[in-house]
Length: 455
Image (cartoon, rainbow, N blue to C red):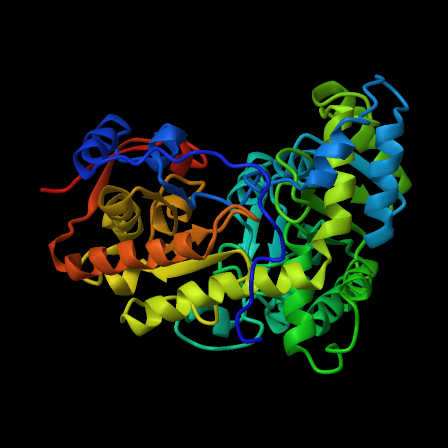
């Protein structure tokens, strides 16, 4: 059949409070035009993030009931460890309360002032943890990935020529090479297995460990299966295993492609580094067999990992975003092409071309979408990436607005509503004005900054 339906039935529901436009105007002012500060109950469709917002399955809720809450050596940990190793066979699996904790563990141990850590594109917390260690987070995305309108199968690929040039000229300054799958900051775009393999080879050629930020590994594997030569007849599980076999370690937020509401892990092959990480973990997160998580959370993650590689789910997941992107494109609303795996990205810099990047067109658009229809989305642009470690500010590579779809939460009619709200905002786009920041934190300012519209 042509219609790709949700491959699940809904057994429990949560009511949505339907706010009015006047209410939302007042709520925006109260939140200082930062949608992170809104109360969730005041949001109609919440597309702020796909992190930790998944609907868990009946099997996951059942797994929660068998959680072993022993402080050390809990059975839940060993079920979790086995589930991770079934897909990513690293020697050491170290649980953390979420992905940024895994990043903090890793970079606090390997990154120092003067170091540079390359990736295709570091996302916000990854960049923040690298910079907090005094190192430079360097983005080496292919040129195709910097053009939102270009249709290319693997726009998340790492620029291998630039990587080798960096390793050749600054080898001693590079403690590790990273790659993010999928590339969130670049529009949720996938990375090919060939590119991952070649990046791994380059890292090994220069004696550098190779790490994968694997938050959306299953979505990336689905795109590899769909688009990469020689992969269409292979299982998602085999593609995932091949991907992580190329790495020396990984960071993971289980709040994405593990259907969990909390959790993550750091995986390593290096024994000495793993010992250091566990020591640091005990200081900040908890004993190494729970890492800041309840046993029930570890069991929910273990079950979620068995569900995320289901091809019927992945087909539906990717098609949902493609459907919205196609509808917006038909309306003349510029989107990143092709559609990403976890979100639709509107090109705010093009959509609001009359607003300069340093007046934050992305922030203007997220506020307009909320005011018009109660949709909460996220700016991925100059607010998030414009402030440099030295205090200067420059336009980001792109100014995007991310409509991140929570997993197994919204239905077809919700998707149609999102399109309708975007169309209504598009009709008045010429009247929208930029923003200025009235207060900001010195790092990762987008979470807590205050804004006001320009007159």
